[in-house]
Image (cartoon, rainbow, N blue to C red; front, side):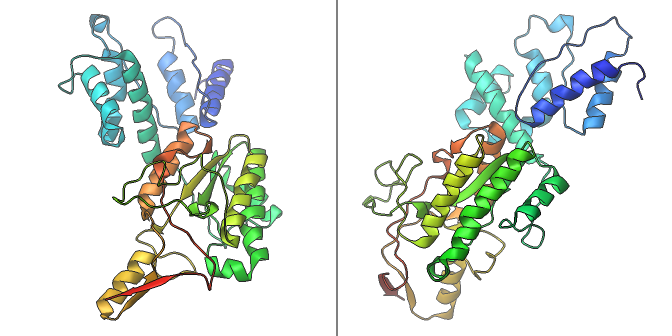
Length: 342
């Protein structure tokens, strides 16, 4: 415990608090050797419970470019594989770890930021909250959850997502997907956190023609700039949820994903599409499936990693084309075209 350094501890504590909210800053601690600068930093970091990177400078390294940067980033270089290849190559070249000799300082700066985001995403403290823990349609429940968990980022994955059931129960669909989005985003802002709303490609009309070669381009894939024009209750309720998140949280992030599949089965839905097809194929019977849709199945782990990185990066609005999707038209019950195959 350090005595008599309350002012310095407050300044450094405020810096860490701003960083948690996504705002950087710089504080220079100066003093004679042995006065306790390192002990002060250790005390503040230990109290905050944050991960820190450190570099120690030596006068003999003054003429070595990026020497301090290499020392600073050494503990997280294992995350370089999660950095875009061109950026990773630039950073490896700057640190003498690759074959690249021409080093662009701007590229190194961008690559360093990407590496820090990737490393931060791997070490994010998180809490998964289920339906039994928090009811997104109840203001008191949402506010109590924010007070209990004290988040800096809230990722709202709650959804009423069975398309056919949404047609039969539109009130419930809008209550969860739209009103729930509003309550969560409002509560996040009240708690000083930012909200991330998980949406869907069903907010689009689905009338873009697929490419003959199957390639995704702005003309054949749905991208974030395309106009929202849902054709069923599920899509309309999620579009309303997007708008609610925009209104409630100036720092909102909206991530549209499609055709999710993962190790765990979807709640209240049984098997995902891939598992259902495999199960029917193993049974040896005919397959009866929709024949007028083109989808981009998305692995839940990949989607989660992308969403966390976007949230940590401070990106706002609708997520960029990282989560690009392609889906053909969709209709409510009674209007689907089916095809059979063996």
